[in-house]
Image (cartoon, rainbow, N blue to C red):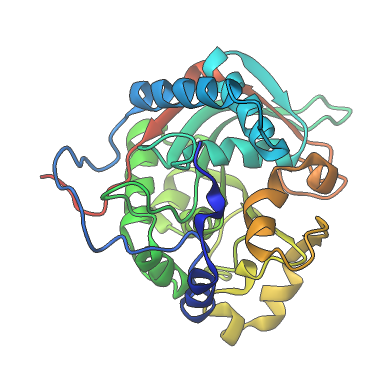
Length: 311
């Protein structure tokens, strides 16, 4: 699998100036308009890519800890079994399955699950978990490049949120409960999902959990929103809200130290996968919370998110 850390200092500088994440590149330049269908279900292709990449990495002698964590989640996904997630790091690794380091086509995934409140009443709720990966430009005609970062950072309409909205409305029954989660740009778009009036009118958006993402649409979001950010990760401050509402931007961020020192890019890309850093946060992003998710991977579907639509 390719490393997330292909980003360089120049990309980080652009991010700081434009609200972009650190996987930066331009999603408005070279695009392939063929077979670009808005919200297309590409689960079969994605699972084939994931199986191939897992086999490739496991055949190598030198595999790092972060890759092992991603492989473990990929193997759960490929098994199509049922697993209970107890913490935010496990949820984040499911989000990471949308990146091109794992597969090439589907930054959006939807999975049926049961949210367990683990209280004396035995409360549970059927939910759909919507996962959104972040800035990624190794895929042609995918709405995860720096221009989308810029639009979302300034809380503007963009192809990514339109694709996500279409996926939800065409594949999740009206009235359903939703948990939406994302990393970096994906977490920004997740907050846009929780702000969309059509979605709020037709679904119960229970929780939004973001990893390494800044505040977006603070006054419009439905449900409980938890933003998690490593102490050296600067991306959670890269949106217009840093200038218009720095108190909320900072106070609404739950921070933990992954021990990365000055390794800003590594912290942004790897910290959130680690249970030793984020294991105290439950699946709703609540520190010392008790909620868990029982996830049915036989229901997981991945969806395309193009920039240019083939009408």
